[in-house]
Image 1: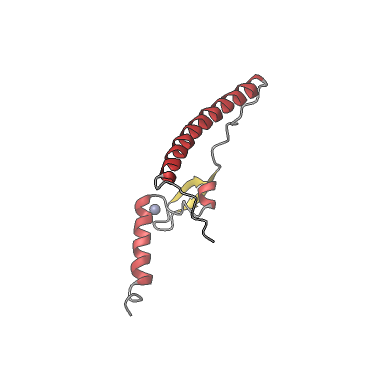
Image 2 (image 1 turned 90 degrees about the vertical axis):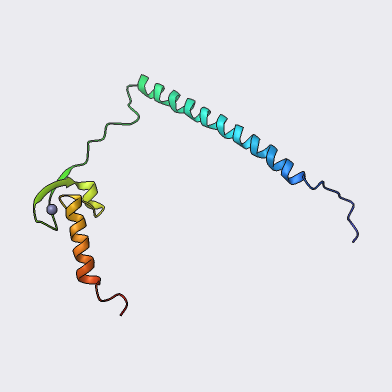
Length: 112
Ligand SMILES: [Zn+2]
């Protein structure tokens, strides 16, 4: 016991943090620009080989849907449909449907 000889200045941590913070910030900036360079280089090399890095994906296939509110048929993207979206022909129909569902299903169940 009695090892109180190690004296650390009060602002030691702050000093280190400040320096490290500055270093980290610079490091991150360097890293980012390096990453961009690598990305550009890779893209350029791929291009030279006739490979497009981001192949033009076909825009989502369309599917026929029917509006859950007004019943009007409309087309939506399959991807949206898979996500549970695209159930209404328009935003207003979605709003109306939600409103109705809210009042129909949930009214009365609150506060009872
Ligand atoms: Zn509708």
